[in-house]
Length: 147
Image (cartoon, rainbow, N blue to C red):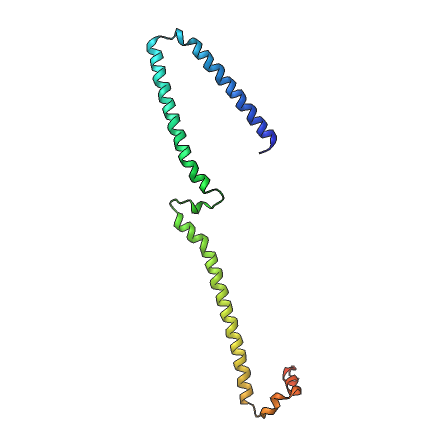
């Protein structure tokens, strides 16, 4: 909230408080001229209004800890009708990511094993003597692309 808005809100609160005080003073001055039956009805109505306001205030204060406890959290963690579905929906993307990473790693390992098996099969099927594999020049020849 900007300072101008805060100042405007504070000045409205002051004006409202002054108006309420003037109105209350005016009503208090004129209570002596009101007949007894009307003053009793007004007193009962005022007591009912105060009780209703007190009940509303108590409900607000009872709801305030739940709001404060949930400050900074998702609405799914506060509870409610769809709490379980909201929690599941928030964890599903993470679970899918983990499953995908595990599958990618298994696929990469499988590809490495298959490449090594293919090289081993070619080497074992060839008619070269074992001493050829220890020759550095022959290894370079194998690494070079075919002509």
